Length: 160
Image (tube, rainbow, N blue to C red):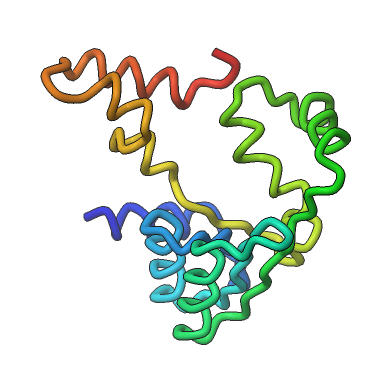
C-alpha cells in the first residue's frame, strides 16, 4: 500500500525519466528511490558527508547506488565557512528552528551539484511515525492520539 502511494506521487509529480534522488541510505529515501527504480526512472543519487568525516549514511547510499547501477554523487560539505553559511541560512533560506539549520545546511552545497530537473527525497518518516527523539520522549507511551497529532502538526507546519 505504501509503495502504491509513493509510485502514485512520483507519477503525479514528474513526467521526466531522469530524476535526482537525495539518498541517505535510510528507509525513507530508499523507499522513494526503489519505487522510482521500479518505474524505470533513470536515477542519479546524491548524498553528502562533512569534510574529513565520511558518514555511515553516505557510505550506505553509495553502496546501494552501486548495487542498483545508479550514478551516485557524494558531495563533500566544507566546514571552514560555518559562520557565513549560518548567515546564508538565516537570510536566504529563512531558517528559524535548530532542525531547519541542521537539515538545510548540507544542501547549500548539494543543490548546486544537481543537474536533473526533478529531485525526489524521502517523506519525513521520522515525523509521520514519531521516531524522532522528541516524539519518543514526549509523545509516546500512554499519550493520546490527539497529542501525537498535535506533535505532527507542529513538526510539519513552518515557522511555528
